Amino acid sequence: MRHIRLGLILIGLAGCSSAPGATPMSSPTPMPAPAPGDGKLRIIAFGAHPDDCELREGGCAAKWAALGHHVKFVSVTNGDIGHWAMAGGPLAKRRAAEVGVTSRILGIDHDVLDIHDGELMVTMENRRSICRLIREYQADVVISHRPNDYHPDHRYVGVLVMDAAYMVTVPFFCPDVPYLTKNPVFLFSEDGFQRPNPFTADIAVSIDDTIEKKLEAVEALHSQFFEGGANGHAGLVPDMGDADKVAARKKEVRDLFSKRFASTANKFRASLEGYYGKEAAAKVGFAEAFEVCEYGRKPSAEEIRRLFPFLPAK
Amino acid sequence: MNSRPAILALLLAASCASPDPVALMDAPQDGKLRIIVFGAHPDDCEWTAGGSAAQWSALGHHVKFVSCTNGDIGHWGMAGGPLAKRRAAEVQKCAAILGTTSQVLDIHDGELMVTMENRRTICRLIREWKADLVISHRPNDYHPDHRYVGVLVMDAAYMVTVPFFCPDTPHLAKNPVFLYSEDEFRRPNPFTADVAVPIDEVIEKKLAAMAALESQFYEGGCNGGPQLVPDPNDPAAVAARKKQVREEFIGYFSEPANRFRAVLEGSYGKDPGSKVRFAEGFEICEYGRRPGPEEIRKLFPFLPAK
Image (cartoon, rainbow over all chains, first blue to last red; front, side, top):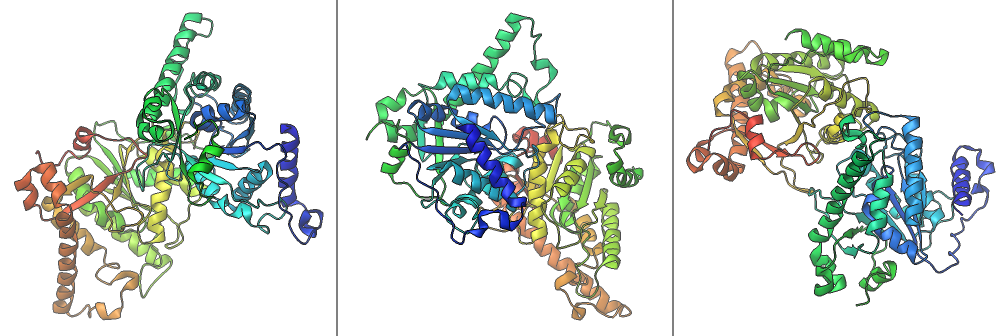
């Protein structure tokens, strides 16, 4: 399934550079994308680097996947400067392999775009790539960073996805890929930045039942967390032959991320109460949170429960 | 000290040929602070941070002003290379007055864009200066060049710490503190004076710098006109125009002190805060290191004790 979809994307991308006569431009009216057949939800999440989606929506992804829904994580850059000691093609390949492992853990699809880490820019080419990916996945829900996160790549993923948010419904924008008749719901993943406006947890989800999978995914992103990524250093990495030290470092990483995922539950306890009731919300240990982007379809409270079918019925 | 601009020019010119940046770095290990200020045009840093700069340099700290464009359309009657050269000379005079170092990037005024090339240039300048503190415009100032300076500096804010971004220039192990200089724009969010700096003690230096930026203020810059400029052979008219510019700036520079009065009084006590006549304000950018009140005092060692 994934390989077929990747193939389609490649054909779609190749369409840009080939002669106009060879593309679907010859058909006068673009056709809408066919409705997905299996009645399951289709969620596509964009992160800047091969680890960002896993950290922000890995728990929900595992929950959707467990119910048979379709989730795809797209890393918009290849992460090729995201390490203190290695870089370039070898690091890009290593990180693509890491998200291959995490997508198996979480039960989802994934894709890594071949754009240099630290060099994502807001270009028409990139807007078209994002638009085509959303359309080809026939997404009901699209998740991205907010455009005021700390890393320029995060911010520009936010801008590019926002710039695609309405355009995915416009037939003659990227007419080579069938447009969506229904604008997806666009969500922002959580961050802590306050300016110009802080993140609002319109949706807060308990991930207590998938936290082990999420922590396993964090462990699989070895270059980033065990080894510390771009701001890491040799002092973090124990002798890999010393089983005790390796286990200690793994535990250190696990504890750090357990705390981080618990802090989301603590920060957005009020929002959790809205969805789970006061008593159940008080017991939530780990959470993920999302803000509804104004540029996509605006979901009602009822639709949010349909899109997040693991939220309890009101 | 005097050799720094020459070394930087050499670095910039040679960077394509990948020199050994370490050998060219001359940041002294003297325990002094290192501050780099980015402005859009050759007058912006002087205006937004000239008073603070004079106080840093008086204590032996190192301040560099970078104009990200050459200012070559910033006049009603002249433009192009001659104006760029004139304005570069003006900011050199200011540097002598304020005790700072000055650099003007050769990018056309009104044409600064958010490009990878410009992000790399900003990143290298911050790294080469080994900055503890970086100051820029906010990305919602009125002039596109101001806004894009803000965006470019924000886009460099984390990347200066990433070893394999611009691997030709050694990365910073410690992310600098990034600050925005003051502006009055309200949307999407107004400027917040996280730091309010009294500049009464150096106001004469700042006013002297404004006087040295003759093309911009005495002659009125791009929105000026010949009616502003008196006959240079009429000393009384020249003196009157100079006085007019000076008085305008006394008004401009007292305005932040009034606007940030509550911050001044909160930071330095009700009585001293209420007496400050002239001030500069800075907002902490969320993308750099986040300084607490103690670190702010280390970074602004001339702030009055509470």
